Length: 320
Ligand SMILES: Cc1cc2nc3c(=O)[nH]c(=O)nc-3n(C[C@H](O)[C@H](O)[C@H](O)COP(=O)(O)O)c2cc1C
Image (tube, rainbow, N blue to C red; front, side):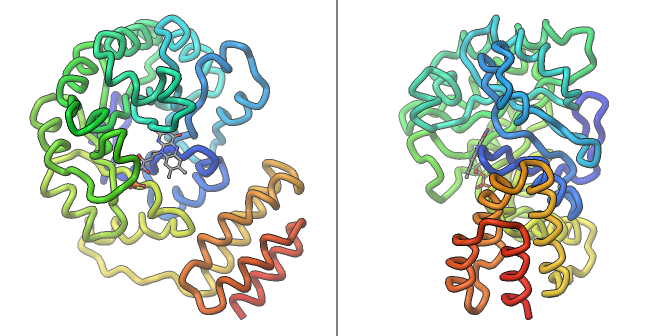
């Protein structure tokens, strides 16, 4: 598939996830076959205020391109200005968040709340596209199936986004009301795909090769986006690549997982410093250890650990 001039062999996307998809995690997913990764959502207002912490979230490193930068907000002018300001980080794509259900986002008129205001949604995409018209940076939009069961308007919003100039769309097949509850509605993704000419990336509950192939086949989508299944399991991308290339997939050895966890959390500490990095490493280690014998014990130990060296020692014990 292609988004602007960006060519992707399989159409495998890592979903943006606030508090998770930082540079260290994105690099790990790239290593195992994610073709396009994305920053976590970035406040358009905060970017315009030149907020230091926000700019840290927007940073993209060279080892992880192509990488999208996602912005959220509901003011077309501020969204357009922030898209321009975001170019400081050289994103390969600017993605617009129209899917976030969190009360502090959607309750503020941002994220999924934009789907309740189709004209505003259109205006935002149009203004962001206009702002970037001579910049050669594609604009994509991430939507849900709608606000609730009575307002499933993904097709209407998708058509408006396309009319406003969007270069691709991601559809998370759930309404805002359903948050993350299964099952995902593949029918609406298929309907969107049939209604627009731009590439459509399907999102929701893709967690292995089987579910990815099903999603491609049922919806006709151009790509699939994976979120929660990649937590502690960047290997999910390799599994899907193997299935798409009809190759045999071999699960990673314990030695490889152990080395990857260490690489991941070392990068986290390098990026964020030991105090924050070690604390953020705790949840990632817990995800990697999920399902392993003794995991709860090691997880408790990691939750007490304060330094990179301590966490590495616990990982050595867990994988011994
Ligand atoms: C912890 C977490 C944080 C998320 N943050 C964002 C975000 O910043 N922007 C966004 O568009 N979606 C966000 N999402 C939604 C995911 O991108 C994705 O649409 C959702 O998890 C469904 O995909 P999955 O079933 O593969 O997890 C988040 C999801 C989770 C679980």
